[in-house]
Image 1 (cartoon, rainbow, N blue to C red):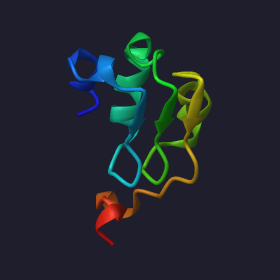
Image 2 (image 1 turned 60 degrees about the horizontal axis):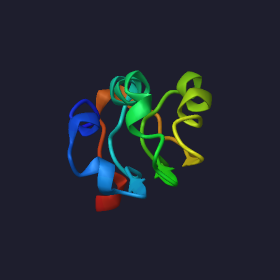
Image 3 (image 1 turned 180 degrees about the horizontal axis):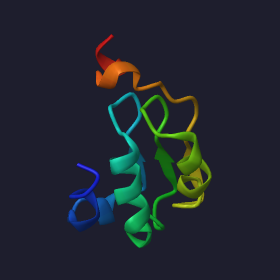
Length: 86
């Protein structure tokens, strides 16, 4: 999803994007950062409660005016799940 999102026609129509409570990892976060220009028009980007490593949090906070990165979960044993389904 993170790799395909920047090319999506829908993204340009959004003011806010909530990708929280998912399974985003370092790979997904890096894909967002590689395409940072695609997200600058957003007013809010929520990335809370994923599996984003600490070393990427500060960079992600620069993607748009308001980015909520909040607490992330640990990828213990490589078994990720979307907390939205808890």
